[in-house]
Length: 92
Figure 1 (cartoon, rainbow, N blue to C red):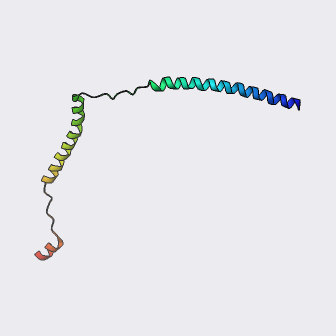
Figure 2 (figure 1 turned 120 degrees about the horizontal axis):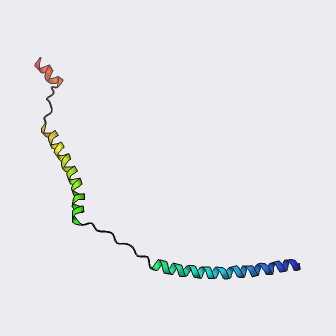
Figure 3 (figure 1 turned 90 degrees about the vertical axis):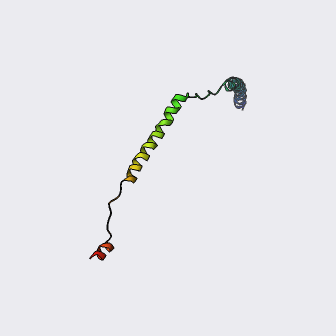
């Protein structure tokens, strides 16, 4: 029994020692967190000058204009007339 009591006493002493170390580690961690979280600044977005913005905007406009141009050519061409079977029957 004496041996068991000595083991319990030793374990409690080690627990107290580890608990003290944890308190110190938590304090150090809080110090680092306070220093590093407060100083982070978000970078502002870079703004483009007008020349690159115009160039970027011109690309889709040119693509749309090209599509309109080909569509207008298709509309101008007339489809060949087709005769219906009903019309052929009336001619005979």
